[in-house]
Length: 252
Ligand code: 13P
Image 1 (cartoon, helix red, strand yellow):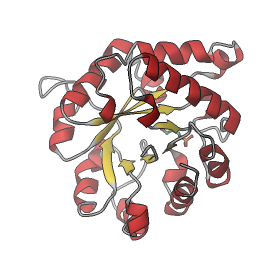
Image 2 (tube, helix red, strand yellow; image 1 turned 90 degrees about the horizontal axis):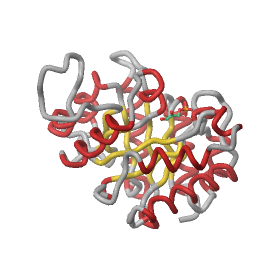
Image 3 (spheres, protein in one colour; image 1 turned 60 degrees about the vertical axis):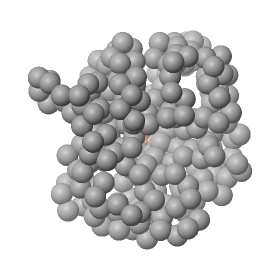
């Protein structure tokens, strides 16, 4: 089963705003046919434990938006992959373009994060994507290849990995990749994963970047688009639920 839906809440929400949203999501996901589809929420770190305990006994899974390789130590402000796993989170994001861009996360650090997360039993959504100038310069495929090859390898634990294609120019801009652009990139990524020895036809490749209820059906209808990593539209139950419906109803 390749379908996977994820909500990246980024740096949003104040205490008290989360439970009303979770209550609406729980109402939908406790329906058997919804609960059968893996769905992961990525809250800000400060709410991680609260969300995990609130969602116990529901099919909704929880992940951290970031994590630092290792167990514990003198790394002020960081939270280790081991701590995240010990709190009951199942997933972590690695390589989000906002981490690459604003926090200067380089390929060596990203590789360490990914390997460490998987060793601690976390599943990883590894995010890649080109900038607007890279796309306009015809470098999209080269950038995707580089981002895959410098972090993933034949030693990657493929059964705890999903990849998210998030073109940087589509994130938070309201301008989504067209279904054709998404399909072309996803098919290319699947080929690259196969080259590395991954069981590529079983891996989930998610699209992210201005996913909305009105573009989700078309984007999810593409054969190599297996799900979504949703930012802005995951902050309201109504829009996230309608994107979920689009995914559940899309062809397998
Ligand atoms: P938006 O859906 O707000 O464009 O964000 C996408 C994203 O970055 C998810 O990780």
